Length: 416
Length: 93
Image (cartoon, rainbow over all chains, first blue to last red; front, side, top):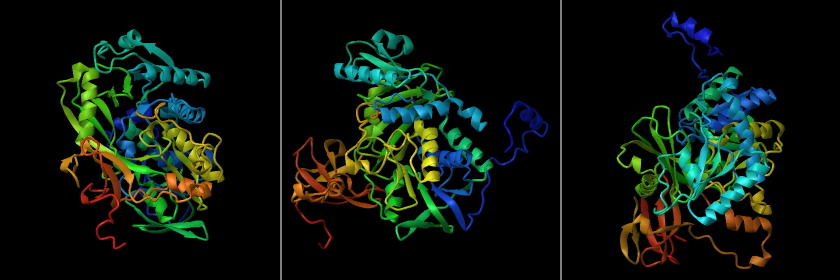
């Protein structure tokens, strides 16, 4: 792997930057691998990287039906935070947050990680009380959190409409200063480059069409580029998880929904933090290019179509314009959708399945991006040892039978 | 925006309706006899089909009656609408 450094930058300037090596290889699939990860998105690539780095498992293939980073990792609104309510979720996301803080250096890839602060607004008394509870819970778990009043919110986000006479007045907010954004594509590329350098084969345009199971054990996968033998198959395919799990006869409590986002035309810097509102279901941040990134909520109906209804977009824009009247005449440049895997308790499932050698990392719903490093870390541990890491031990598939659900609904998981 | 043909009111915009998830999930007849696994399957074991899906809708801002639809979850095209209690068209069962 060619290091990205000032020295190499100067060196390559003599050849007009035309001779930089390819960032990752495009190998032909081998006949067999120790582990086949399905899905070259953030989670899949992070898992491959930590398998190689933490566990020395390098005979790994990451197969991807489309192109690397073309799914949810390239479609989210890039927000990173760890201020969840329950201990299990807090520890998992905080582990990810700590990894984010050193990740650009570790991967030698600029992830444009920006800890600009995340505000979660409260619009009514109950929400304010719930938020106070969550802030206290965060503090007890060693996660930075503050409860702000209206005036403090207005100081951080002067363009926010904090008038008491609007439909959803801002009564306060939770504030996580360490939260922020990271460039989502760079996360996929950075992990891909680092995993490839450690010997992981990333095979794009290779769709899994079947999972071979014999006597309750995984023996391989059928793909559009032939059969690949393996004893371990790890799914990291977000909205398509149930489609693949069904191939192995595993039923998951996941439903797939469209989730949409929008980007405005670029403007001068007006907002230097991330503002999220669960009640009106909108969230806004500004990219370094100056575009506003606006996230909407999921469509109520299930759907794999990577697009949603305009009614959801309209609601989101109404909310954003009420919160930020200054945006009312902005034009939107792009609008897209993705397919997210919604779990009944709004917490992920990371672990083993009834089929030996088949692992799932799914149910992240609308909030998978922020967890990418942490998810990869614990998932790699689970695959390498055939045992969950202590951080993902509570996030079993079995919890839907035992009733030990981790209910993050309403607490922190409506908007991501 | 979907247009949904309510069997009682006719074609209306999607925003008048609420979604009810997968259709034809039978309630357990003797709930006290169920094991934990069977309960979990009843509560969380819905299919998540990519393709033709039978699902429930309710006309919340209209007649407030439930009905079923067959919809393609990839193209979102609604193939057929039928009343609650009716057999799905072309199902043969």
